[in-house]
Picture 1 (cartoon, helix red, strand yellow):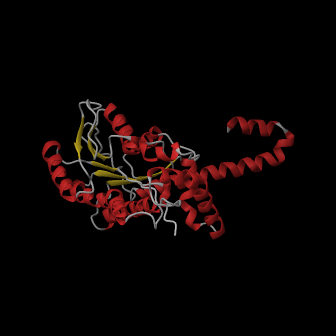
Picture 2 (picture 1 turned 135 degrees about the vertical axis):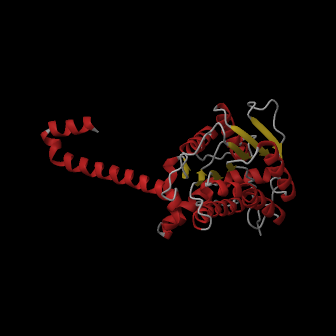
Picture 3 (picture 1 turned 45 degrees about the horizontal axis):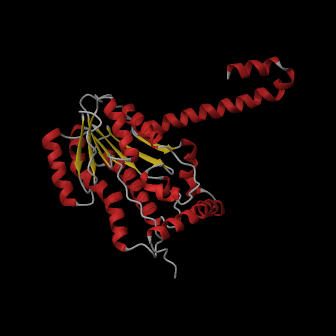
Length: 323
């Protein structure tokens, strides 16, 4: 910026319009910085928290055996943090580090969740960080998806968040120390066809995150318990590999990018609202856009993914919901 300023003032032709334009640019940057500062303070209820000691913290993460979850586990384990994986699949041996522990668990099974969480408290003490990362995505239209699959999707993507919060949040509130991370999706803001069940569940997860933050401050006075939501776009994980195999052309985000953002947020000690990639942040305000533009974006997303989705569903023998 200093070099640009020097060039403008040294060139008479640039000086007339360049200086006012530079002033506008500097003003916009200043406003953006103030906005970011205010947003961070409000997300943290204007309450600082310097009590984090990562040698003593315990992180529980669902879906930690693959995709984003595996990358988060890898990065935290490398820093010496105790990490506990909850996953429906059996963890591969050996685990990434001696400070990583794994429990095979179907998080949609309430009785199993209660039993496993009790074991965790006995064997490891009370977790201080919960990362709700596990998710289920089944491609089918509203008319084509069996209700059992709808219920299973919501059990994994939404209901488990409530139950795990009931298990681990009371101690965080008691100590006024903790962090709950909700991995939602940009699909909560921009749903596509034949993916409405998943998008609906992620919209519910986003509402869970927002409501949780308010309840912690208003009902429990636990303003130092942090909450973060993560809103990624398409991620190159096993969850969408069938769509990629059938020709999905959407830009992909690497799991490492999302995992890095989550770990940075945890180590900041602050609540957060993470859109990955950050260049997609405008999409979170899409419902406030003019309806003609809102619908154009939704139709564009759905049309661009339709062929790959239908091809993948046909290959899997799923119903398209045609009537």
